[in-house]
Length: 109
Image 1 (cartoon, rainbow, N blue to C red):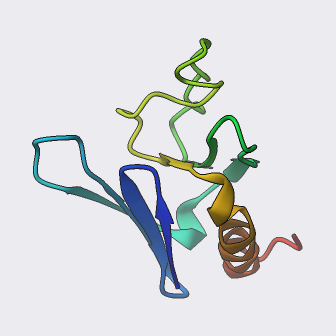
Image 2 (spheres, rainbow, N blue to C red):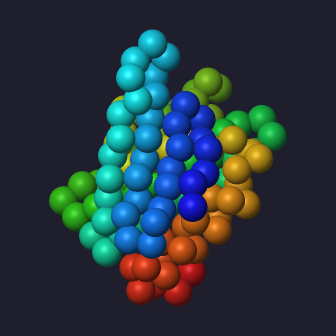
């Protein structure tokens, strides 16, 4: 399953989460996380005015702090490898992906 985000995408194959991010003018960067290694998830649905985000918390790291401002809309910075901003049209698809990740972690969504 693959969901398109803002300047990137997120995929889940049942075991591995792949976050692909692309900055303007740069080659895409790919970050892989094993679902079993994740200690927590955060999901902020997008509104029609502001993008939302999905974030995965891994052992030894704290969740990235949400940036404050009109242009960021309360999302983690683009440099955070464990999060991805999502547009409003992707809310349903990312919620489904998050449910599958939670099942793989053994957590009831």
